[in-house]
Each structure stands twice: as structure tokens, then as C-alpha cells.
Length: 582
Image 1 (cartoon, rainbow, N blue to C red):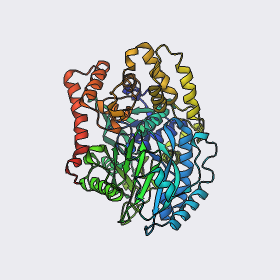
Image 2: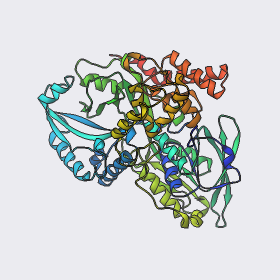
Image 3: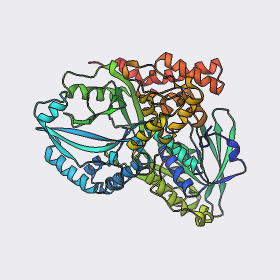
């Protein structure tokens, strides 16, 4: 039906030497693939699970300018974050919206009004060009001050004792980070890259250079759907596996000269705590912070930052982190408004931070580092030529990370013969689904409404708005499916007290046939919003699995296994709620 799609055709890797092979399909790997392919390199990427399934989806749903980095005087990182926030917003305006965040200020607060005011003045100065070339609906105001009386009137749930007022500053909110990662993946495919999810790196085949240094001759990968193994050959290999960086280095027999500082962060997705469209950030009595942000009709509450020493494969929400956020909310807000039964999802991820020797992971820098394993050791025999790892980084600056990694690769001798054919980097590069770099998503929605009226089978306004937000210009592919089969306009989940996204069956077809969804988990938790905002009902999971089975050929045993795996995921994620005490 549609030409651009994510497919898993391993025949296209045979008898082929790629310029760049990337291990890891989070936003870091996908950003590198997009940049490399857009500049004319032949690129292949493998991901052992699904695109953006782990750290890239466990975000605070913000594309932020790095305000908190001012605390550590990282002015360069703040400036970079502000510039990249603007570029990501311009490139993907359908998946981004403006969000004001209010910080109530109280008498006796550890971080007082003067300190905050000074920080915001510096922040605004560094963000002098934040609205350059930006559509009107994504232009961010300067910070402002709201009186105590006005704040209490607007948000009665904010504690009023000793309240002086609140500062408001503005960021971009990512309305569906999982789809934004997917759009970047599709953008890499549009530029010519091959991307394979559910494909695990098994081992490297190593060779020797004349100077005694080692090189990677090939990567042996396993298609986890079929069980078949395939050989990937490339001039340069990039380890973009995030928290698994050290494990991938181990497969190359490399003792890393650098290591990660891993920390977990969790968020709650809850029924709405406040009836307003701004976020709130509070300082707690013990010097901590937490935020409550409106997101997709829910409240997103976070965030923890706790060291983690275990395997990323074993991570689940830890009881002490869940209790920390829960107590922060109920000890700060009057009436202890948060109850366990209000929490619909607990999202956990691991930050793969650059190890810096800081006492806490919160103090660790969010800068990214690029490690060339051919030059990090004292002798050539210890190095691995044509092998690069990436550590650190964050969603907002992922485009810049991709750019810098590709620049590093282009200086390597392994790609010397390719430099004359390389295109210049383009910062104004819209993602697949974008209505145009710097163009207004609000204006495009109005256009989409007008066009949808002439459809053979028009959809409801709420459904259309959800589709345009999730798919941008590619929402027409969903409408085409509905025109061919109007039964595909049926809702995936019933109203569910107004908390269910307005998603339809045609999106399942799109996920499987055009977006490389291989499992029920891929569909529920990343292609759709449904599984991110909370655990779907058993009835809904059965409906999605049955519909998917008709498209994939799953037998009854496979269908039941897919449902069991999703149910088990939510059971483990929500297990700590059983032990919460009011």
C-alpha cells in the first residue's frame, strides 16, 4: 500500500560491506543511522529488542533546554540543548507542544527566589534565539513571575502556607517519545539505511592488522523471530547500545578504558492530579525535587536518580524509588492526593552516564562521549581498529550526537575512500511525518480536518486529531486503510473513564505492515499510546492480539504467549504498588 516502511529483509545484507554497522536501536543509534545515511553512507543497524524500547522511552516526555545544568556551570551544554531543542521541535512539530512549568517558591525554601531569578535570567540570555525560525505555536516565552494569590486561584491544590509565588518557564513536551524515535528510524530508512529490530548481536569475528592491532571483520547477528543467524560486514562498527555498552565491548574481547555510571529513573503515570495545562515542580523538605506534568490526559510524576549496578536486562522499578516519589507527592501536597489505585503505569529506565567520579549520579554530567577503541590503549595490540562506542547523551541533543559521531567516523582511515562522496550535514532535516521544517502543526491539523471531510469514510474529530498528532502527514495512510475497510475505524479500547487514547484498529495494521512491529508488546507499548499511559484491560489485549494474529499468522499458542508476556511486564512494573503505605 505504501512505499516507505520498516522491513526486516536480511537478504539485503548478503554479499555487502556496509560503511557503518550500528549496534543499538535507541535514539542514540537511530540518530547516528539517520545522520550517516543522510550524508550518503551505507548504513545497517541492529537492535536486540524493539526500536526505542528501553531508555529512549523512559523519559520525562520533555525536550528541554538544560536548565538544571546551570547548577553545575555547564553553560556550553545548556546552549547546545537550547539549540537542539529548537531543531528537534522544528523537525517534528506534530509530536511536540509547548509546556509551561511552574516552580512554587516558599519562604525558607533551600533554593530561594533570588537564586531562581538569577538562574532564569541566565537561561533566557542563553536562549536568546530559541524562537528563530520557529512556528508561532511552538514559540517559547521568557520566564515570568506569578503572585501567590494568582497561583492559588489557578491551582488550589498547591500548598498556600508561606507561598511567595511561582516562576514559570517553558520547554517542549514530547507527546509520544516512542513514535518520535520510530519517526527518526523511518527517516533513516528513507535516506537508505537498513534497520533490524529483534536482532541480537551474538559475537564478533575478529581479524588482525599489520601493526598488530585487531579489527572487527564481521558481526554475527541472530534474527530472534526466525532463529536464523546472519553475517554483517562493515568498514566501521559503532557501539550505541546505551546501558549495554560494556557487554558489547566484551563481545569484542575489549577491556574498556572507560566505563559507565548507570542510574535508574522512574516515573508514575497517574490519573490527573490537577486540572490545568501547566507542569509543576516542587522542592521537598530534604532538598529533593519532583514534578507533576500533564501528559496525554494523565499526570506524569517523577523523577528518581539512583545508582544501579545490575544488568540492564534485570531492571524493574525498585521499591525504595517508588516510595520516594509517592512520599514526596503526599508529604508536599495537601490532603495526600495520590493513592496507589491512581497509578496506571510505572516507567523505569537506565541512564548510561559517562563515569566522572562524582559522588552522586545526579551530579554526573549529561554530556556524551565518543570512544575510539583503536586509540584508547597504550599499545596497538590492545586496540580495535574501526570500532567506536558512544556513552552518555540525552534525547534532546541526539541529533547533535549523531552529527558528531559521523564526523568522527569520517576521519577514520577505514572510510577514506568514501569521503569524496559525502554530502554536508543538514541541520534543517524534517523527520518522516513532519509537515515541514519549522512549519506549524496547528495549521497542518486545520488542513487535515478540511481534507478528511471528503473521505469515503470520515473518522471522528477526536480520532483524526490523535492520528495527526501521532503520525503527522502519514495519518493519511491510516485513513486510506479505513477507506478500504471501514471496520478498521473501530476503537481499540472503550472510553475507560475518558483515559483511553482515541486509537483505532487500522493502527495495528500500520504497526505490523509498515513499522516492523513483531510482538504484541511492540504494538501496545510503542506503536500505540495505549500501553504507555497504563495497563490495557485483558479484553483489550485479547482484541489487539486477535487482530494482530490475523495479519501475522500467529497460532493460538503464540497469541496466548504474546498476551502473557505483556501481562507479565505490567505485573512486574506495578508490583511495588502492593507494598505502598499511606
